Image (cartoon, rainbow, N blue to C red):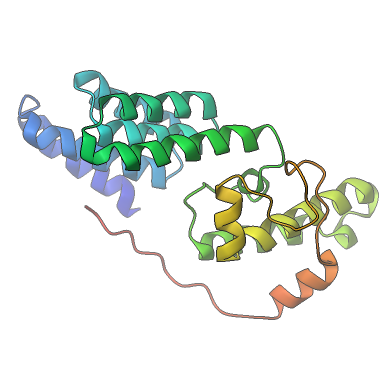
Length: 221
């Protein structure tokens, strides 16, 4: 669609004078973001590495870290954010430090119960993307539709509902993103945490809220 068309146009423009780095470098980051939006993580990382290998920058390293996190390469992502902190000017140090802390949380959560992975969405997903994925996965794993594998379906259905309960709530999501317990009785870590609400009740409540899907338009630049 429009992402692929834009990538082609940008490469056409860059190839006019590939040595004109003042144009090529920021344009290459637009190409990376488009591949990221298409969930073409390997290609996004390949193109971002061209930018970083040409000359390291905080912006380039942060985008590389985001790509690697989306590809579930959390250790590599953390290294990219740490390198950005090392080279950052003083006025960007605080922002870069927060990015490192977020990457550390993502790495820790990847070894526990990862709500983003459960819903198959990136960590920067918008609410409508989270809601869409929840509905698709909840329908797919509803125990009534998986009578031949009911035990696994019930666990998946519960995890999906729990993930959506947290990620669709601004306050809970912010706590989760900081690596804090999101439920009062959670204790240490997400592993083994049981869902607060009856998953079937939660499913019916969310599916009866209605609301049609809207066309998503990407803003370039």
